[in-house]
Amino acid sequence: MQYINIANEGVKTLLPYQAGKPVEELERELGISNIIKLASNENPFGLPESAKQAIQAELDNLTRYPDSNGFYFKQAVAKKFGLNAEQITLGNGSNDLLELIAHTFANENDEIMFSQYAFIVYPLVTQAINAKKVEIPAKNYGANLDAFLQAITDKTKLIYLANPNNPTGSFLSAVEISEFLSNVPEQVIVVLDEAYTEFTLPEERVDSFALLNKHKNLVICRTLSKAYGLAGLRIGYAVSSSEIADLFNRVRQPFNCNSLALAAATAVINDDSFIAKVAENNRQGLKLLEDFFTTKGLSYIPSKGNFVMLDLQQPAQPIYQALLHKGVIVRPIASYGLPNHLRISIGLPEENQRFIDALSEILKI
Image (cartoon, rainbow, N blue to C red; front, side):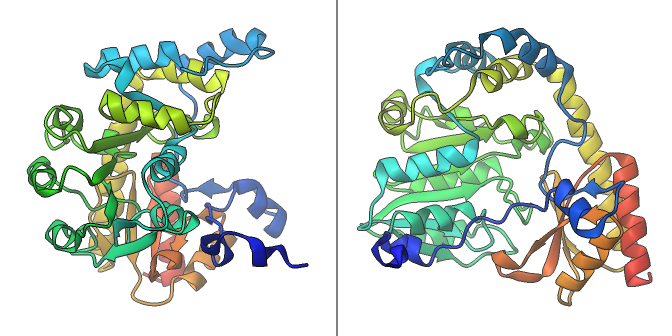
C-alpha cells in the first residue's frame, strides 16, 4: 500500500521546508574545515552570556515539565513592551505560531493571502491545511498592499505579512501598515511577522503593538531566533487581543516551549546591550556588502533585515556550489521563484569579508 494515497490532499504534493545547509553536512560532503555559514540569518555572536547563565541555573530542573504557560517569560515581555500577559501566546519559534494561527482560524473552505516572494512557510502552512493559496504579485520585491485589498473576498480568512520580508529584505512603513489595517475587514485576521524587527533602525521601526488598540484583528509574531541568538532553543511569541490569544491557547500544544528556552528567553529579552551590539554589527556588515555590490556593478535588493539578496542575473546554483567549495555557505532561493538570486546573511566582519573575497574570486571581479 502507498500511504500517500490516504494522506490529506494538501500533504500529497507538499515539499518539505528546505533549511540552510548545516556546517557539519558540508564538512562531511567535502572534507573541509574552517567553514562559515551565512545562510540562515542566525546571530553571528553566538549565545549571549545572559542566556548561558540562565540555562546553567535551569539544568537541575530538567526532570520536571516546563511551565506550560511560560509565566515569567510572558511577564518579562509584557513589562518590556507595555502589554498584558493575557495577550501573549508562546511558540516553538515563530514558525510554530504561524502554523498555529492557521489551524485556529482557517480550513479548506477559506483563502489565505500572502505576497509573492514572502516567507515560504506561509504557502506551506496554507497547503498543509488544504486552504486556498492567494499569492499577490510583488511590487519591487515587496508586498503590494493595494493589490492585497483588492483581492480580499468573503472567503479570505488570513493575511500573512512579513516586515521586514524574508528573503527580499523589503520593508513597509508604519503609515503603510496603519492605512492597510484600516481598510481590512475586521473578520480577516492579519498576521504581521516581525522576525527581523530588531534589525530596523529605531526611527523607522513600526510600533506594531500600539496598533493592537485599534485593530483587534491584528496578530504580531516575533522570534528570539535572530537578534537574540536563541535559534537552537526555538522560542517565539505572538501578541494579539486577549480574546484571540485565548483561542490560540486552546489549540497550542502544552509544553511547546522547553525549560531551557523559557529561562534563556526570560533573561535575554531585557539584554538591551547585546541587542544593540548585534544591530550595530548588522548595520555595518550590511553596508559593507551593499557597498561592495554597488562598486562591482552587482544587482541587489536593499534590505532592512540581517541579510541581503543578491541578483546574479544568471543561474545562482553554480555560484552557490563554488562558494561551498571555498567553505562559504549562503542560501540559494530558487524555491521562492528566484533562481538567479542568493541570500547572504550578515556575519561577523571577518566572515563578511571572506564572502566578499570568495565571490570576487569566483566571478573574477
